[in-house]
Image (tube, rainbow, N blue to C red):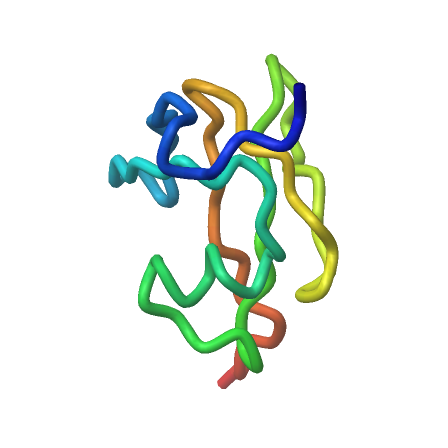
Length: 83
């Protein structure tokens, strides 16, 4: 059944920029994960490293992200000033 309260679901460990986090809510908007990592969603995007792909998969701020055990997310700066 999918109507279990969040508190009864087992927690899942994942990382953002190499730092481990734990949650029971396995579906969250990308913006929530950026806030959890302490970055401003106006300046950063969320990416997910999958397998051996060199480029992370990008998520829009309002896109729901499925968090799997051991998932590896990264923050991606939207614009960088060039001197």
